[in-house]
Length: 146
Figure 1: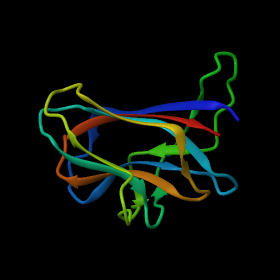
Figure 2: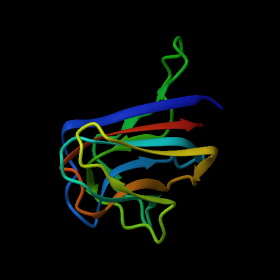
Figure 3: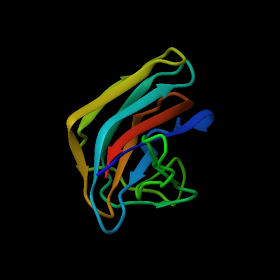
Figure 4: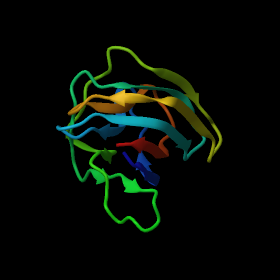
């Protein structure tokens, strides 16, 4: 297994719609992915409530980006993909592993750590869900072991 990370989003990433996914990590069809940490960084001065959970049904990512190796000389990408847009959106998780109030200060991070790993089953999608309207822009960073 190897450690991979992915940073996605930023000052133009609109995530302010309540009751919808704003970020997703799709596990490949042939293996589970272990999430070690997830960071949501506020990009504007509006707060709200976010939750992290497995989507009841995975979405169809548009332009999903593969996780990147943390080993400096390894240019092989991982198998999981992260996205902030879908042609068919993921559905709300039946339960959230974690919830947080997104900060109202630009650059305010919300950090979820999983020291023993949060397992995302194969073909499933871990989503950051806007429970209540959140920051109008944000960036997302995830670290996985796969």
